[in-house]
Length: 296
Image (cartoon, rainbow, N blue to C red; front, top):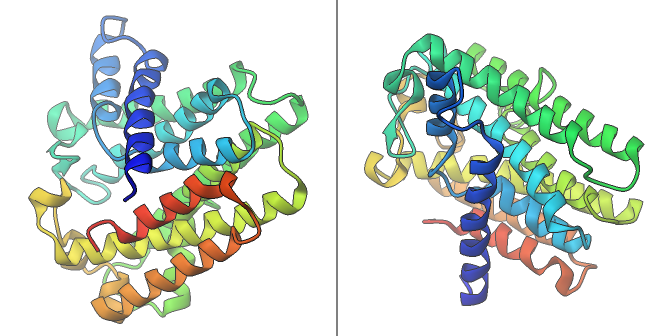
């Protein structure tokens, strides 16, 4: 990882934490327990990969960083809500997330359910109450984009397929379909939302869309490899949980060497999508490297 990219990433991660602190309800605001649990579930955890992609895409498009802050926060709130709900006993029933007790363990199941609901609502509140681009119609499209990426045709739909697939042996296209929705949709949305806070041509947007899709799928493949090869302390979540529960993964289907090769191929495709761009796409290229090459 180049020193200047490392500094860029660290600066954005630190600054974005302040953004999240400002958009989340304060912990002393009623209902206090709910707001405390929301802040517990969002703050001080994770690499913020989705916001970083939004910031890199925003830089490509010449976007005002204040606009990208809000778009990135909306995406991260949706991601955080999904983690809170995924960890609950009715879903993946996990007790550790980002190195600390999951929300339903730290608080209780009812509070965790409300935390997820509230984070999702807050995400769309942010997208609707701030000016993110010059054209209102385009901003409505951005709200629609995140809604689709979050719902039954995106992340939630992918989770439903995931739950239905426990104990089954999926074929590779079926596994890809599941993760294009469960993981990839929100990563793609982060790229496109950051881009649309600025100005790009239709052709450029199509190439960035392709980049987002490839990076989103690569992220999940790498996650599966790390889940099978790293320990719980390193991951900050329970290692090997999906495989132990009979969920299909790229490692259980392909094995670690072939899964690694798949991630490399997706990495190459993501970079090819950016091939006609110059230095303005540099951060996006570096993030693709970071996503695929992390502890790999």
